[in-house]
Length: 169
Image (cartoon, rainbow, N blue to C red; front, top):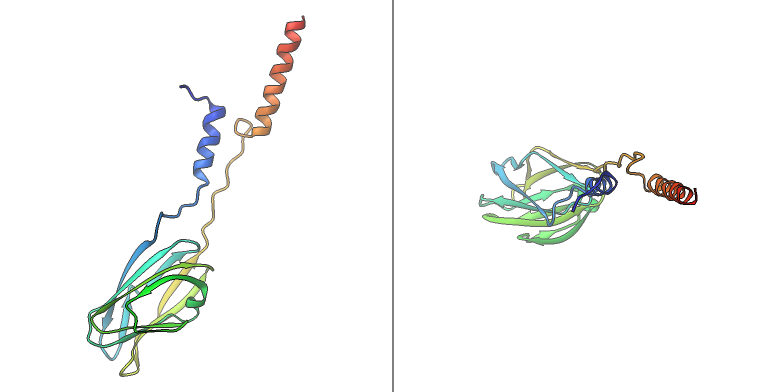
C-alpha cells in the first residue's frame, strides 16, 4: 500500500494534535525532611498540568505526625483517592509518623499555590514550598493546500470536470 501526501498529511496532523497526557496517573515521589522543629516536604516545588492525573506519594520516615498544608490548591483539584492519612480537610492532610500518604488527583485550574509542612504535636511549621499548575496549549495544525480537505475536494472536482470535458471533445 502506497500513501500519497494527501493521505499522509492529515494522518500526521491528527497525531500531532493529540493531548500530551500520559495514560494513567503520573507518579510523583516526595518525602518529609527536616527536623521536628522545621519539617519540610521535598521537593520544594511541584509542577502539574491541568487535566493530567497524578499520584503523589509522600514518605514520612520520622516518628512525628506531619500536616501537609496545601491551602487553596485542594479546592482546585478533583481528588480520586487518598490513602495513608488519619485526618483530611480541604486544605490539609495529616501524615502519621512512619507512614506514606498516597493522593491521586487531577488539577482542574491553572495557578500558583503555596504549601508547607507542620509538626502537628509541636505546632511548628517548615518553610513554604510552591505548587505550579499549568494549562497545556495544544498545537494547532498547519493547514496547507495539500492538507486542507476543502482544497482537496475542489481539486478533485476540477480534475473530474476536466476529464469529463476531455471525454466530450
